[in-house]
Amino acid sequence: MSGRSLPDEPHRRYDPLLEEWVLVSAGRTNRPWLGSREQTPKAGLPTYDPACYLCPGNTRASGQTNPDYPGTFVFTNDFAALRPQSPTQRAADGLLVTEGERGTSRVLCFSPRHDLVLASMPLTEVRGVIDVWASQTAELGGAYRWVQVFENRGQEMGASNPHPHGQIWAGSALPSLAAREEDSQRKHVTTHGSRLLLDYVAQETGGPRVVEEDDHWLLVVPFWAVWPYETLLIARQPAARLPDLDASRRDSLAAMLARLLGRYDHLFDRPFPFSMGWHQAPFQSDAERHWQLHAHFYPPLLGPNVRKFMVGYELLAESQRDITAEDAAERLRSASPVPSADARSS
Ligand SMILES: [Zn+2]
Ligand SMILES: [Zn+2]
Image (cartoon, rainbow, N blue to C red; front, top):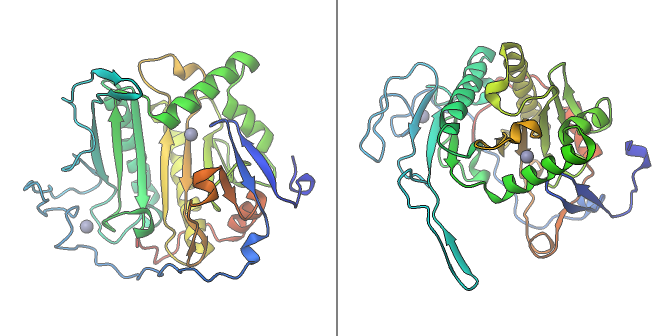
């Protein structure tokens, strides 16, 4: 479906991954804005902050001291949301149901440098982060069903520390959103004999929602995007998980990430906040037959200093967006992909 054949009037779009709808009301961004505006974060962080619990050599709240790490550094979160020894029994009392959950949560420092972000790191170091994402996935997948690699960047997304870092949570259960994507991708292969997201890649390639593409990856504002500048990064060839990627696909991914984050930072000329994360096939299942590796990027900003809130209709009825996916993709294509020299975490 090209941009021109889409209606200008309010309409709903279907998300085949989550099997839900989003209301698209283009043109509402012209309305006067009287709400709060986000503060543009200050640039100019030090390369080392003695008060930062993620910087090399510093002591964390747990009393543990970080090693003088030269590249990436992984440790178990001192305030882990999941624990490996939790009991896993299920209990029900009428409508009140509980299920024990076993898991772990780790923190991954991308760089020893306090002032860098993924977008401003050299590509070889971004590639190093990808390798750690992959090796952590393989290791945790040996014990847990779901491995969630993610990053929250910026105060708007609740990142409590500007030091470049992400998280990896792994658990014994399939989380709710993962279960829905698992179900939709499984059904698609059964019905069509091909992977849902590879069919989507074929349909989107060369179209109005593409932001970046190369031989290995397609980056689009998905047709069913909810957040204004949401993007979806999909491996073009079959791959279920990050460890499946060979060296050339990982190198290509490093360049793709740098270009995307460069575009985000240039879109409003400010460090762009987002939550991003990988969706990889669940372990302990046959999901690698139908699951296609992809990453979601969910930035909260609608304008330079205006954020989108999921409130009212979104909480009570269904998601709604104010600019079309095609319009968002065009604005992202117009923004420079070159990482800004002063890209700084907020
Ligand atoms: Zn730091
Ligand atoms: Zn997904």
